[in-house]
Length: 129
Image (cartoon, rainbow, N blue to C red; front, side):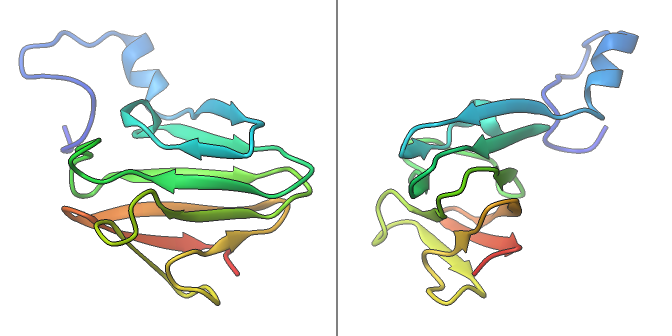
């Protein structure tokens, strides 16, 4: 099995376990700010739905030690712009092709993948501004 799946050597997997790997679990967020956590990795889609601006924050590795290679998916369905950035910008590096590389934004109905490539380094790719 590929690295990063939530199973351990010796686990007996059922059809339900295997079928759940191909579907996203939705984590709906309607507040103005949300910090991603360990429950947001694997097949989770974070949706933001706010009429005004909102923020998705990436914590430091010391706070939440996501494995390198983790991908977190975000979809903004709200009218407000969603900004993706680090909780601690001096420690966690967020890189993107957005107008502000460390704080890319998602307009309504746009999505992005947050990809961890090193201890405190994340790339944001997708429909960002």
